[in-house]
Length: 238
Length: 238
Image (cartoon, rainbow over all chains, first blue to last red; front, side, top):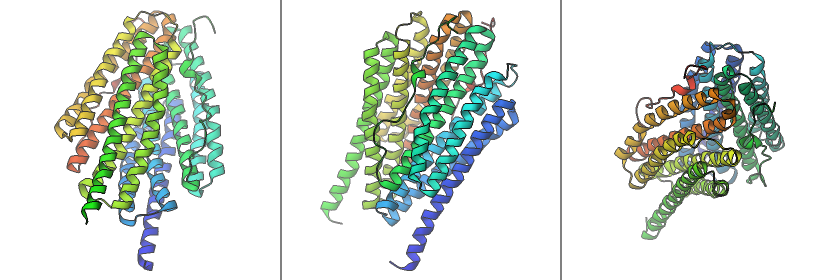
């Protein structure tokens, strides 16, 4: 194989890495902005998040097509083949994270003019801060191929699920206390659910990193903690 | 190219088609069963749906890896390359549909012993019936490469969004009428949201069919009708 072909193949992989890194940056910013828009009730910032999602969709399609062409043209084996498959998977998760951030932004537009105690929003903000940290850490781990850091992210997801569960109960309690809270708290419930699902996608990326480096996906069940799907709250129980 | 290689390549594509068809069957059954479990409050059937999801996850990974190996080994071009990319995309959507059906099943387990008027559940059932029809039609269209049937599915999604919007308002109204409805109706809200998202994934599959056959994705924005993200209901407004 000539130097020229080798270097052009490396260039293809480098381009793929750069595109995924760009997607990661956009997804991170969308999530930070969506949360800030929710806390500050900033509908202009929320609109910016909704607009940014188009860029993420375009990037994902490009990465998918570029990866498949790379596989068809270069027939990569072992680690290089895993790198291309991983690229497709990570791009898919980042696109979903963008969708979820966009959904939060749409709800900010919806609840824009309802006055409610700011305190209720803080629980969602706290949860979002933790998930943003997870997203940053997993993207760093993907960049440096750090399996141990990825595994750390994977394990921390159950703490986020636990936080979501307590937030779910808290929001239900607010709704039972005063029917005027119901509409607002329902939107917050969906926001919290979206944040929790962004956490799930960071866990997916952590699993992909392990597959990329070792060729294996993590053994055993995820440390899930999704009891809120089973949670119910009765009026007067608070 | 020898007869032998051609026939083995056709066999690879045929295997891929069969695996996707199996995934489609599992996803359809999961959705039908999850809805029936919700209507009948049948927690055993709900547990069966939760278990079935594992098969779907395994099939998706297999399809993804098989497609990528097919691309690497055979270097397919044009229609065959699109067939393999489409396979990866459709498998991804079917896996997500299974996840959403599983989430509905988990909520059936949660609300199992709460007595509530059956009437509230019927709206979700009606919406689910429509989405099940969409799923069946889009899987048929994928099997027969029928772009016109796929486009029909694509256009009908806005009717489902509209139904979701009215259901969302109705459930919020029930919650405001009586705080004892809040916990139950919150679970139904998430069930309805999951059904609406299954509808979105059938729309994705419709778009993939168009890409597969024509090489182009549908022009213009989807006929979305997602006003519920913006909907609010005030107490006493009902």
